[in-house]
Image (cartoon, rainbow, N blue to C red):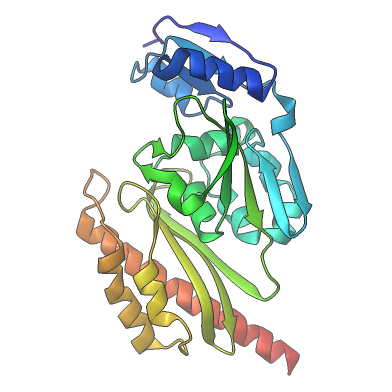
Length: 294
């Protein structure tokens, strides 16, 4: 199949793009890398009246570090993050997660802004934003506003963006010295959509978790912070009993769904497996560093 007829416009500034969004409302779709939108157009799952191509707004493609914050423009491509020394040094969780995103051809074209605005519940990056306590920078006719990642993703392909607003960037706190991270997902094959995944950021000292953010994805309609599970291990020496308590608490945090890939029961089981592996990795990393100093 091919896309239905649509008009096409290529604005040169954020202001022009948001004005077009305000003018056309729900009849408009924004295109950047097109890795999710173009297949949907060709399958006629979407039939917009007009496509607003923001790919020529060069001011939205950047990665910078200043004042304890990593700032990334919405048009930064996945490959930009993959090759960025700043990302590897200051946001290692994101550097790790990018390697799981689809395949090289898609990473070469896909943009981080498009990925986040698309809000696929099986996508890696929305969960990373929540684990990293990132802030989404949004522009609209009335100016800019900032929304915490934990409040940005509302449901399946649903975000806090209004019809006349554009995601223009994100701000991520520089990972503190001594912080630890974990990322893993289960999928049928490398590059396939995740069946269950976990992005985690933690501060661990002497085998005790001082703070922890557990962000699950592909388990339910949106990425989810497992606050109850994290609370079970906070300020506790990590051991089998503590991990088991945290695993039990996942039933309060998650609402796993059934689909052709896995049942809800299987997804909850995989979430527990991911949590155990996460905790084990965090403790093992601390133990290895302790022995290296002896």
